[in-house]
Length: 225
Image 1 (tube, one colour):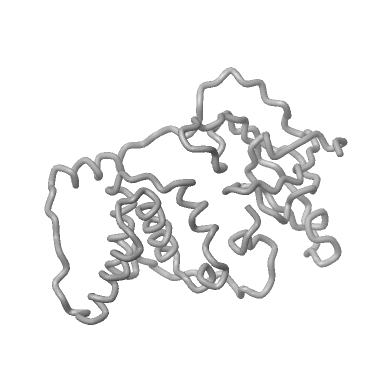
Image 2: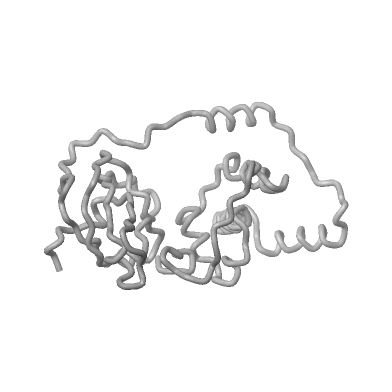
């Protein structure tokens, strides 16, 4: 999906601010949003990232990280029929009228333990699959000029550019958007090195390079058109 979220290589957003001893959550509500994503088993149609990337650009640029998560969670609940926009707006209006009103609570210790166990469970991301990689370390490849309608991990600034495979990781599920009830597609993943001159021409700093992890479906032999 081409959208404002794909900021790689863009100017005008200022430096990345690094916060010393940054807390996990800056505000209590951020932790609650994180808990909602883990505890609410209603799926977000199209996936969390697709819903975030569909946000209005002005809304996207003025929203914090967990505000984007909250937006996607609400969109998923509305799409699933769990609540309506009218019900949501009525609740917002009530809290604006009485900001100090006590919020309802529902205690469910058993479900809390289930969510915590799922959070702590490690799931290996690589897959055992009899797939033969198309490329080898040292191969020169070209990134395919793809413009998918849904979420993709393929940055816009690297499409059509040439790079060199420097590492093969194994077989992993493709993280791009897929139709509902469709299992993930396992593909080989490579680390690909790009000279910055290839990416940004004369404006690039000398002697620099960019490494990107890329699924095989993003790549083609360097001689392909």
